[in-house]
Length: 204
Image (tube, rainbow, N blue to C red; front, side, top):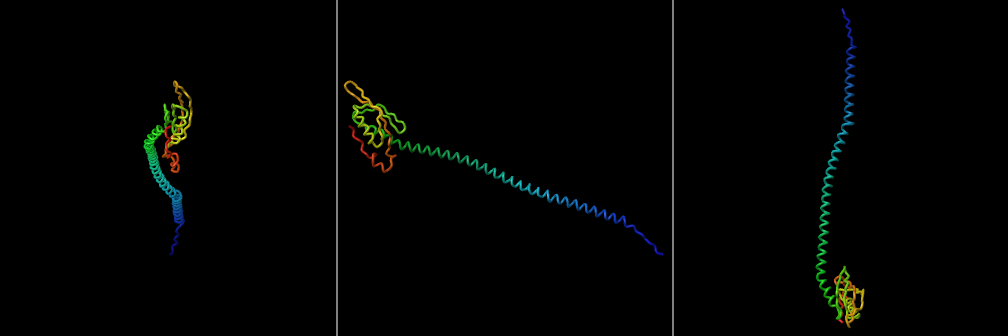
């Protein structure tokens, strides 16, 4: 006798479909998480790394700029010291050159005086010397100006004031004149054969 066995497969199929659905949802969630990681987290980590690298470079550049600024300050200080030393050296050289020039200056100031002319005061301002004196006559003053003009260390004598005065029977000429210093060392080479080598006019 054959027996017909009937098996209900509906519950098993429903369970299989439920498992597939859950597995699909799980895979979908994992794919979504992977997408979020790929699209959001990895680029963020990458850009954060780039930012860290750039900040490190910026810090290095700032430190190098600070070092360069300190070096510039030191260089400026050295340049000021150098300029100060050069100025002092020039002043010393000028003093050394003018030391002998002063001797020649006063020596010729005396040598150019003709007989009968006497100086009472001398005022030097810059390159100009103002001379006050007394002469026995106007002609003596004229001779003095000629001697100054021919001297190597003087140039451009100009009479400012001359007036006559009397001292008993003797008449005198009080005068004021200016003359410019003209060092032979400051003249060009082609001019040194001129006034610089002229003989000083003899005293009258």
